[in-house]
Image (cartoon, rainbow, N blue to C red; front, side):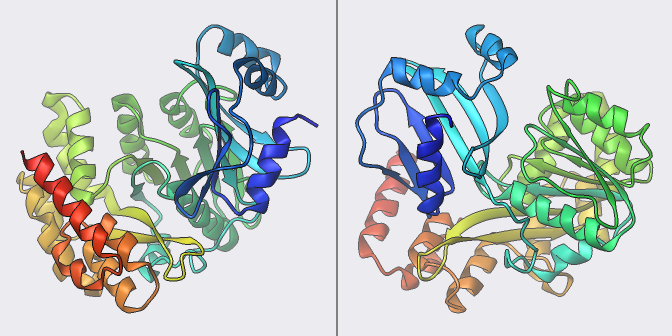
Length: 368
């Protein structure tokens, strides 16, 4: 058993989401969103190097020796699957281990709105799940793929970096390909997938213009495409896609989004009311004729007003969803206050008054 597995086992026992190991500090666990050190000495350079070397393949050792960061999935000896990122910093080696649950959660267990499940009824188009790093995008996409796997007879091709949740084929066939192991890039993976008779293509990240263009091609040619972006609202998501492509293609991109974008689901993770876990709260945009017209006429900034008035279609702004979750006693009001964009409606719910002062001072300093 690799020595690093002892830290991973402790993290699983504590119910953490991430385990951090880095030279110069003790191992740390992220528990319900907070980073907490464990009772252990500061890690030394030589021992951290030994820990890491034990879990690398010869090819990974060579890549790391050449100065490359590493991303891969790791299965510990005592059970437990992790997404791993290993890197170098000023004092030595660091590693982040993200816990991947054994069971793929359902959309219901994640507490996601019913409209998310309805989106799986589409056979063609683009569904984007967005949010900052660590906001649960991979878990939401895994739940969507699992639902399709259980209820449809599809050929589902998943492109991931690295493979996280492992999907066993049920009613559908699920083919999981890892970037760097099975295919060189997301763009090449989508290009290859189009020759593999797909019904659904999952793109782990739209990280460059070529990948975005290939995903658009797949959605236009009769496939359901699921993908993620590191954006924090529907408006920013649409702007990112338009700005990523060449200027002379932007009108074409706007027309594509108006005709083929099905929805943007932007999520944050917020502590539950009892602070024992975190749950996703979402901003949801569902494409309508009105929103399509706003995109085509360069009025993307007006989309939030459509989300506010589109509740009968399942749409909602993030702040609307946070307020409803507070009123239903589903989430911690102090954490919701931190996540809210317009904090004024949330002030009356805050339980820790020092939060108000800290936020106000932060806003004042940024204004100065």
